[in-house]
Amino acid sequence: MAITMTGEVQLPAPRETVWDRLNDPETLRVCIPGCEMLDRLSDFEFQAVAVTKIGPVKARWKGKVLLMDLDPPASYRIVGEGEGGVAGFAKGGAAVALLENEGGTVLSYTVEAQIGGKLAQLGQRLIAGASKKMADEFFNRFAAAVTPGEPVEPINTATPS
Image 1 (cartoon, helix red, strand yellow):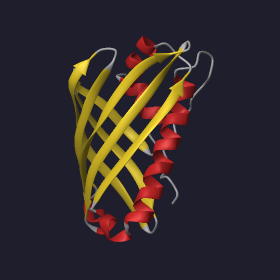
Image 2 (cartoon, one colour):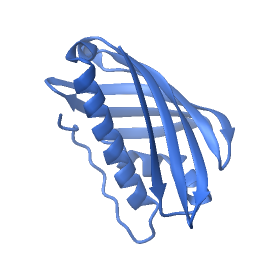
Image 3 (cartoon, rainbow, N blue to C red):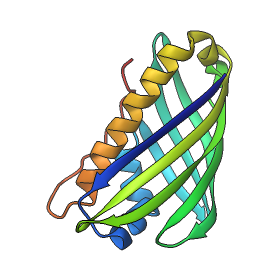
């Protein structure tokens, strides 16, 4: 099953700060819903473990992500894949662009992913809704992470459907 998602979010921080935080494993770990572990393997590669729950399917995902086409601090592409055991697999990528705007930064993204296994059997509407909810949660937490004085605590629980 193919999934495409696009979005744009206004962040209250300079573009360089947003870029630095997008490349900081600890910031990402506390912002990604259900993320248990995120380690930098090299300047361009990360390894992650995250738990998700979409409808009746709960899975612990293990995967790798590569950063490509880097143009600091303006844009990059993210390509990755993960395995969720009997829940299935996910692979895909995202294009991320950062534009300075009125004292802050506009982050725009386009995600294209393929999923298979039990997760794909849940149906497009349920998957799309859960994906949007997880993206919204990530960006709300990321906005707090780039705002001076805003604490962000990790959430290591599965995202409810």
